Length: 461
Image (cartoon, rainbow, N blue to C red):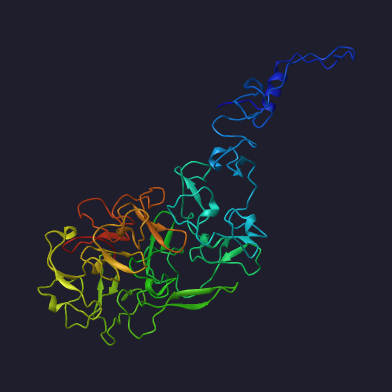
């Protein structure tokens, strides 16, 4: 509903008058009666005519669709102020967003204050969860369908914009690619922590393609400049982690502390050989896959073109390789692996040594379905179908939607929101491609495999 502000009305009155600087006013002349002044929202009234607009409810002018302060209510949504306290609409006290200074939790929209700074609540929402304000989201971002800050209506927690690299200014952990905003002075003005070793996933990197500065050895531009990428499946050595189950080695260990005293936890390899799922061969990565002493046996190209350890000693058929019987499949890493006929995902193909749905896996290639994603307990398992929106994922290829995005809490979830995904509409790294069809995203660093029964987008050599 359109309305004129007092300032605008004053402008019209000034523009319409015939003003003369020499005009005098007779003190005995009575002022013109301009009639009663209407009441704005929240003003006292007895009938609707007393109000400039909207009805008169309980002797208070309201907007009709929402109740003004002082009017009875049942829920926050009933009130224009969005605050219903003790059955009466009232002005909601101002609260501070995540990252702003606070004294107590009550100062913060999130209800949580740590180190004199508002922080996300312990049970903060991840990407896709409904929200009404930024403080409810782990990422500190609550957006509407247009992708702008929530101002009522249908809103969801969103991942932060392109994350901030090591050494850059920050106020929130969620702003940093490594999830650590180092603030030793506790004044809310920090820098993204320097965690040493290789660059973790999300960090800005140099040239696209194979890049030894990344822990994953893979650097691609997915819309905001070249950045280190997750490989999908288990996290390789030196990637950041929060639990043992995320790591290919099964070991997530502290590798130091930030300047403000918080632990830095990364996937560790305590053995002398590379466990199943680790990146191997090329870009400075060792080829010594377990079992120890096997040399480069079991270090094979994946459907994404880079090499990972598959597990096997050379005397058996490796996972993902053609087979005739289950007995010939390597079972050291996967005791329940079988020689399986083609699935719907690879109809018409050869029998392969691969894992059934529900079995633990290191990455998608070793699953008959091609999907290896986290279950509800945080364990990587083969799945029979793509992961729906909101489900945990490790790579875009896991998802039914357009991508696997940061959930704002250290994990990743699938989404169909094009605003959050790589703007490239073609097949992405690791996805099935047509040699004569649409080009792979991130070309020429990524190409459609010129060989193989079922071509996928791979890193160019």
